[in-house]
Image 1 (tube, helix red, strand yellow):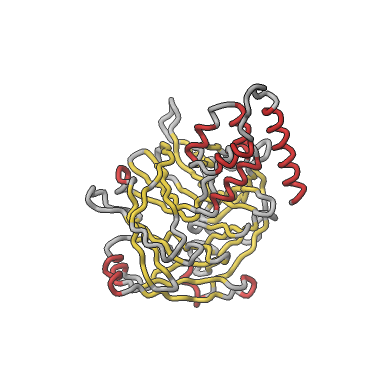
Image 2: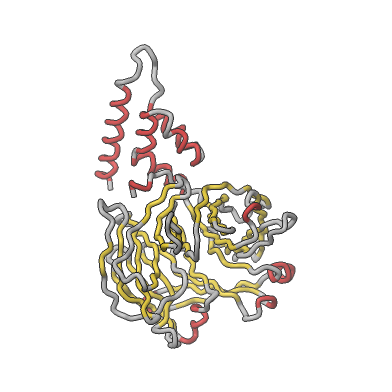
Length: 406
């Protein structure tokens, strides 16, 4: 690690010296280190503007030293990312993610990032850091039917990278997941074709390679497709079944670095973990699951949190969070979905289909597991696209690294 940073530092110094020699001899230039300190304090939208000011600024803003330091500082200030669908567009917004359970903020303004067109069904995989993986249909000029695209987006820079189509027959459906290996700092996409309701032709694509290409890998246990997954500490988890008719449930573990599969069998006492409404979460670095208590939405009195202890022993612990009586009726009015759990152990919920009435506020709810309290935070600035289908993701990080550098 030290040698890596030494290499980055040497490259940085060479760039700084090269531009310093071109400065006007009669002027006293601003030290480049001071430039970087100033840039680190700028909002992400200003960084894009600064890249266009001069070659010097573009060079400084492209240094690995700067982009990694900016990302590290942004990671200490995670945000909530909203993907909002309306008509034929998908719009992205973000807000600060409240980190202090004692913070009494009741109003937060959303920042607009970008919008993209889409023409048919799509799915959004949970963001990792500052990148979002999206599969959606796009109708190209001169065509009548949409073509399904797999695209990596960076909402902070509004850059995208369209991935090549996996090596499979076009008539087959595809299911894809997004993972990250923190050891090698590599992003990978896992894609599988769906044939007869069973995953086939498992393939992996690694971002950052000179030529993007898919590689076939082996999976030892056949399984049917499940719902959304989550990547925690280099392991991609997603729920599945042996087949669509089987009651045998499992959580598939794809180890991003080794590209190997393992499986966690869900035994009968824990079968609630695989409900369609279940949300997999990162609970203090461990795999967890959020499940509403009861089947009647309007009579729910709380929710359960299941946390996986030792994966090898299949040990799960259950925690129940009872909603305060005052909030039971309030939360029952909306079809709330789980966004996840913050680093301070607050469960975040939001409406998937918010009201499109201009007089109806849009809220995000923070449920404090320790204090048994709930904070309702109004989100402003998203009203033009409220009323359709929303997705909400925690721990989004603003990243100024150009997407070609991943």
